[in-house]
Length: 350
Image (cartoon, rainbow, N blue to C red):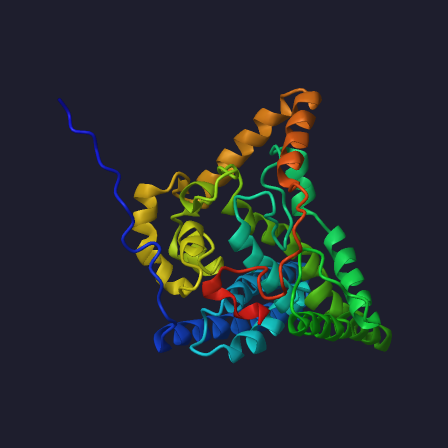
């Protein structure tokens, strides 16, 4: 009689680890590489001819997208051995794509806490519970309505009327967010001023066009995280996807491909997650070999849903929205220091 196999428990996956000097050095090297690539992109846009200029715009868009992933590491405080440099570094990393460091941090840490519950929502809001269709993918990839929402946040911050719409936060965090949006307002103002002064070409090539091109890049980079996973469970081994990937994809996404590992231990420096991938490969439900294999699966699912009747797709979408809507709670709301990250990474709300 065969003996039933005993499920293996993870030994390293959930283990915490402090940021070391070596981790900090690796992150500083990443910053230097990003700065060098931005310089290369800027130099390309300055060359004569459409081809080098277009290549420069695409390179800048790709690097600006990569910088948001570096900002993501900063907001988890896993880049430096002390807390203060994270915001100092994180703010400029998000500026090219108009991402507020503190707003992203507060919302994203809530995502970590609420993943697999009806309250879950990401800063870059793509509904992973809705049926996957080509139309949804197109709307997510070219979601330029986000620029309007950012403009609204900037205006409200400048007016002093900005409010957080996903819970309660401390006055300190609210002040940091509004300050960052006020500083962000200088970007479009400077762009308009430079265009009036006759420098519209460089503004277009160095910022405006890369900003537009980066939208689908960033969408595709973040798409694998939870799409087509079991979104109704809080088990990170079932609600999140990891992609083994190559050294290049791991560098470019700044370890976002190792997403199960990241959710299991979000206070561990990104460069240490690869050591945990073996356990994820054997224990997690959703592990893809490469990005092409993942996107092929997405294309098949979108095509399959496109062949279904619109009524069936609409019914599934309505069911997804119902699941995402939390039931009303009669108890008082949480205090400003209780919303967001788990206790091990809760210093953002203090």
